[in-house]
Image (cartoon, rainbow, N blue to C red):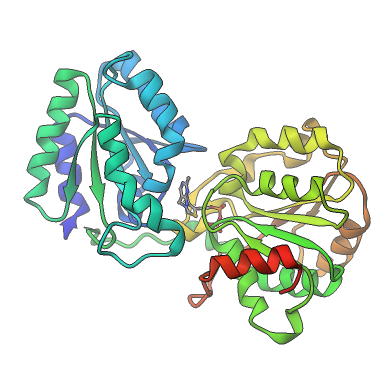
Length: 371
Ligand SMILES: Cc1ncc(C[n+]2csc(CCOP(=O)(O)OP(=O)(O)O)c2C)c(N)n1
């Protein structure tokens, strides 16, 4: 185990003051520390490629070593700028990557993390990125050496962090709890009662999929629509939904989190261009990456009405009051054209949300049309 304060001591020694990344549950304490210590610049990026790119720009302007943090599932999002810009054989831009290692061999993890967990070190080797694995304080010495090497030889270096390694003495409260908005349970209660039997539902990674799955555990909520849970592939929910909707006569509901929607927001252009009557995009906007620690997305600052209209969606509706859930949902279900429903939701308080497990069976049920 390593106290996050000690990790930052090593980073300080190497004058690392600039951070960009996409939050990860393994690195939750790392994010908390950054949030608490305002002397650091921290830019939470829309996706990991963007985080690397902000780091590249930072080095170009300052000559200092930036730190990019990410979960290993996002390593693939970052490969493009890593291999085609920052790599030692291209522009030789020094970067330090701190990577949360889900699915690390020997650690129990969810099915979506197994493949990536196994190939993470192989990807780094293919990219010729030297790395260390952080387990205890002794490994910080290796990290220190790597950080120095990065700057001296203009190289990308990395350190891998497994589950439960980083500790932080302080606990940060999720500030997004303050205002009580729509409870996802209230939403799904109405949604599953109102939609037609033969609806397609595709839900994003994070708490969205798990909240819906919880309802499917109760008999009265079975048989209303069929679900495909995006347990991984964060940010791609709307495009999987579009692929379904293009060839389906049924209403297709894409239920996205705000972090997920932001990650590959350019996809919304394809939704608008499709002009599909049966495409229905629902955003659970809680202004944070709730399921990995509540790090802010700042999507409360975005004007989704204008954004979706600019992308060519035909309708925008919003639910921010519990009393309006049914009325607005009825309208949303009826209207035609790519339509967008922004639901201002509360952060999750249910500690026992189920996790999608038998993925092949989930896929078969979706294809065969029964839940
Ligand atoms: C490419 C990628 N990057 C990072 C993650 C880690 N991750 C899992 S869920 C999540 C937050 C998703 O936020 P949001 O869509 O707002 O849903 P919420 O957590 O609020 O339910 C993150 C960052 C991931 N799974 N994949």
